[in-house]
Length: 238
Image 1 (cartoon, rainbow, N blue to C red):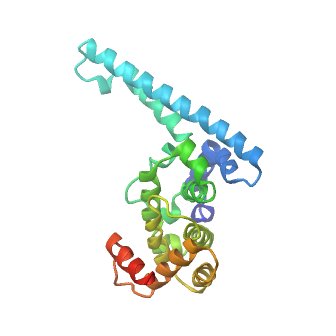
Image 2 (cartoon, rainbow, N blue to C red; image 1 turned 90 degrees about the vertical axis):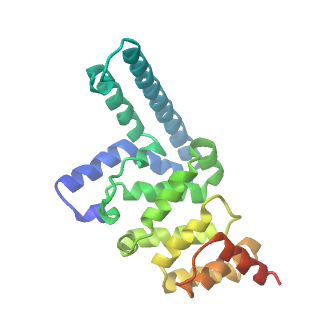
Image 3 (cartoon, rainbow, N blue to C red; image 1 turned 60 degrees about the vertical axis):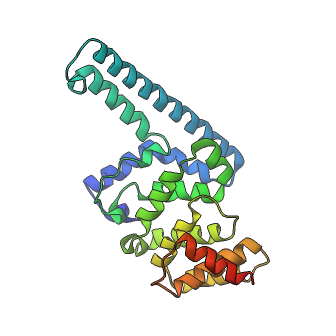
C-alpha cells in the first residue's frame, strides 16, 4: 500500500502502526479462535484506554480543585494526557482518530488499518457492533478513502472493490450508502462485473443495492442522497 513505497521515516511510521495494531488483523480472520483472541486483546485495549481517560479526568479535577490556573500546562496532567493518547492509539476505533487533516491518505501509514476497520465491519458486522460500534468513524473513514489517490493504489483499490461488493450483498446497515462514494472512485470493469453478478443473484438485497449503485455510476451528476435512493427504489419496485 502507499506506505510500502516509502523509506526512512515513512517506514518507521508504518512499523509503529504495526507495533500498535498488528493484532487487529485477527479481527478479520476466518478462524473463530483467532478472532476470539483478537477480540480479547481489543477488550483489554479498550479497558486500558478507559482507565487512562479516567485518570486524566481525575487529575484535571484535582488540579482545578487546587485552583491551578493553567492545568493543561501542569506536568501531571501532561503525563496523564500522554498516557491516555498512548492507550488510545493501541485500540479501536480510537486508533483511527489521530490522522492529521490534509495528510495524503494514499501515503498515510495508517491506511491498511483504516481498510481493516471497514473490512471488519463488512465481514463480521455483529462482532463489530458488539465490540467497537462507531458509526461516525465508519462514515469518516469511507469519505476519507473516497479519493482518486487512494483509488489508484492497486492494493487499496482491490480492497475497496471487495468492500463495495460485500456491502451491496447484505441488508442495509447504518452509513452503508456512503460506499457509493467509494464505488465512484473505483468504477471500472472489475467493480461492474461484481455488481452485475450481485444484481443478477437471487439475493433480493443484492439485486436492489447493486442495481442502484450501477444506476448511479452511470449518472455521475446525480447526488447520492436519501431522496434519490428512495425515488429510485420506488421506481424499481413498480
